[in-house]
Image (cartoon, rainbow, N blue to C red; front, side):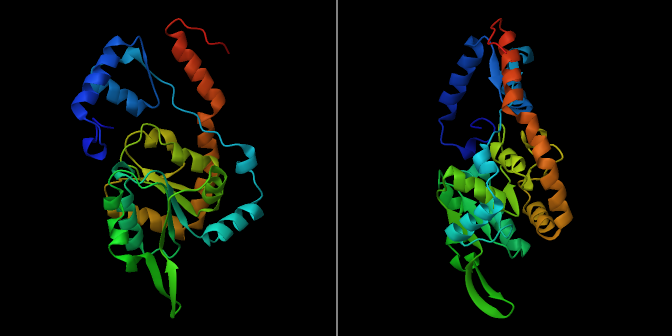
Length: 277
C-alpha cells in the first residue's frame, strides 16, 4: 500500500522501500495473501516469481454468531441502532483514504436510496476528509421528508465501535455490505459478509475480483457514478440480492481454514519444512 498508493498512508516511503527491499533480498521465501499482492511484490521489488507463494487468507465466523436466530439479530440491530432488518446498507472498516468512504458517502447521497447507510469503524488518518461531506453539511445526514411528513432520521450513521457479536448481527441484518476500497491485499470484510449470506458491492481493483469472484457486484471504486448505479441495483432488485446472497457462502468456502492450512503447508514444503497435515 505505501508503494502503490503512497498518499493513503503515513509511512516514510523511502525507509519503507529500503526495508522491504532488504526483506526481499534476505528472505528465503515470501508468503503473501493474494495473486494481486504477489504481482506487486514481483513487479515493485524485483523478486523472482518462484520465490513468492500466495496462500490467501481464511475466513471463519463462530457458529454461535453466524447462526444466531434471526429474531435475536433483528432485536439487536433494532434495539441498539434503531435499524430495520435488511433496511440499511453497511460499511465496516477503518475510516481512512484507502477505504474510499468519502466517495461512498457521495455516491449514496446521490443515489436517492432511502434506506440509511451505516458506517462502522474508527476514525483513522485523514478521516476528517473522508467524512467532510457528512459533517460540514449536516443537513445531508437526514431524510427530511417521507410521504409528505417531516422526519429527523439519519440518512448516514457513523458508529465508532461495535463488538464482534454485534458486528456480525449488523452484517447479517444489512440489505447489502458496501466495501469500495481502493486497494486491498485480501479484502476480508467483503468475504465475511459473503460467508454470512449478505450481498456485497465492492471494487474491481487489486485483490477484490479474485476474492469475490462472480458472487458480488464489482465497480470502479474511483467512479462515483458506478457506485451510484451499484447501490441503486442492490436497493431495487430483490432477485439480484437473492442471487448474491445464495452465491456468497459458496465463494467464501474457497477460503475456509481447512483450505488455508493446505496452502500454508504447501508453501512451507517448498522450503523443505514439514508442518504436518
